[in-house]
Amino acid sequence: MKPVRTLAAALDEETVVLDGGLSNQLVAQGCDLSDSLWSARLLVEEPEQIEAAHAAYVRAGARVLITSSYQATYEGFAQRGVGKEDASELLVRSVELARRAARAGEREVWVAASVGPYGAMLADGSEYRGRYGLSVAELERFHRPRIETLASAAPDVLALETVPDTDEAEALLRAAEGSGVPVWLSYSIEGEHTRAGQPLAEAFALAAGADQVVAVGINCCEPGDTDRAVEIAASVTGKPVVVYPNSGEEWDATARAWRGEAAFDPARVRSWRAAGARLVGGCCRVGPDGIAELSALTAGAA
Image 1: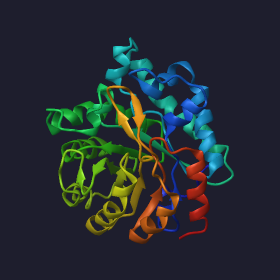
Image 2: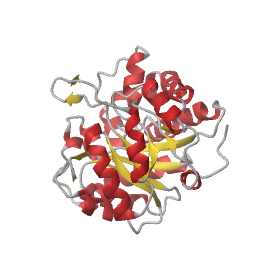
Image 3: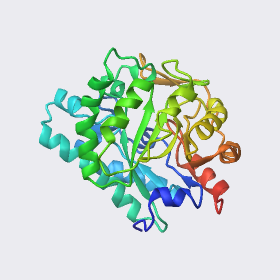
C-alpha cells in the first residue's frame, strides 16, 4: 500500500515501528556478506535477496523500511570497478527494492533511504569512532552526491544514521539541504555522549531549529544507553525521537564477528514512548521476531 500521509504527519498521530537489522536478515537468508561493501554488494549480485529481507520486516509489522544504501557510496563502488553511472543506478535501486516490498504490505509503509557515515565506506570500524581528520566541508563534499542521488529516487525520508560525531552531523545536514526530502538524524552513542565523545545535548542541538529534520535520536548503540538519550533528544529539540539500538552484542571489526550476549528488550518501548520516541525499531542483530514484538506492543498506541 502506498502511503497517503507523510511520515511526519504519521508521527503526530501514532508510534511508528521501524525495521530491524538488514544484514542479519540477509545472513539468515543464506547470503554471504564477507565483503567490504557488506549488504550493498547484493545490490549488484542478488537484489532479490534485499527485497526479500525488506518483505520479512513488513510481515513482522515494520512500517518503515531502511534501504540497503548504508555502505553504498560512489567511492566504495569505484574501488570495485563500478563506474559513477552504474553506482547511481544501484543507489536508486536500493530505494526501489524497499518501495516494492513496502507496497506489498497491507498498511502504510514508508521508505527511509539510508545515508551511513564516512567511516562505513572505510569498512574498518571507524564509523564507531568518528574524527576521521576531515573538515566539515570535506565531509559535506563526500556525502552530497550520494544524498542527491538517493533523493532523486523519492524516498519518504533520508535516514542520516549511525553518525559518530557532530562534525559529520553538521556535514550531513548541510548536504541534505535543498534535497526536497525530509530527514532524520540519528547518532551512534556511548552513554550520554556521541561515539566521538561530545555531549548528546550539544549533538542534538544541531538539529533543533532545522525544519527539514522530522526526527532526531540514536541507533546502533547499546540498548541500555537508549532511555536517557531519548529524554535528552526530546528535551533539547522538541522533535519526535527515533530510537533503534543494536541487540546488545558487540561488533569486533578485526575479527568481523559479533561478541557477547543479546540484551534487546522490546518492552523498553514503553519508556521510550513516555520520553518522546515516535519512531522505534532495532538495528544490528535485531531481527523480524524482535520487530514483531515491538509492533504488538505499540499497536494502536498514539
